[in-house]
Image 1 (tube, rainbow, N blue to C red):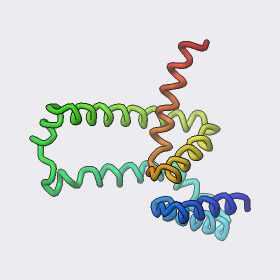
Image 2: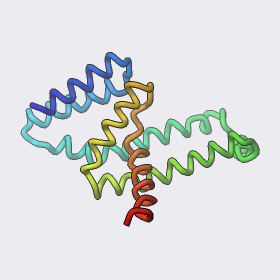
Image 3: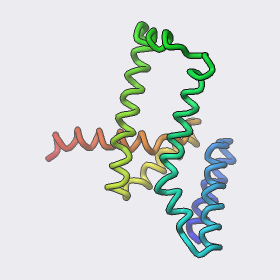
Length: 155
């Protein structure tokens, strides 16, 4: 029952903060939780927990590729992205974000105790800074980088 209270609080805060992405996600998770309780099987939650991230990444990547598909972004645009300072910074930021995400998944799998902190940080960013809730994966990657650098200084 504690899970429903926590999810309800996230739902209320999301509604107050007008963050519909988190509202929809919370409603989906509440529905999955109810389904798992009605059926007496946690398979639905387990499946979403283990495969949902991949589905989300696929959908997000597809959305990012749409400008290429509709001709808004061309190959020359992509090549020209290396010719301006903002383009170079954007390419670098994309590279770093992808690297962070790449190490973030294994960090969350090997240290599941870090997930609540990532969730709290992401939700704070969403609620107080109008962020978007794609943060846990990248935040896990940044956490990995900080911890890796820190381990060299604090052995």
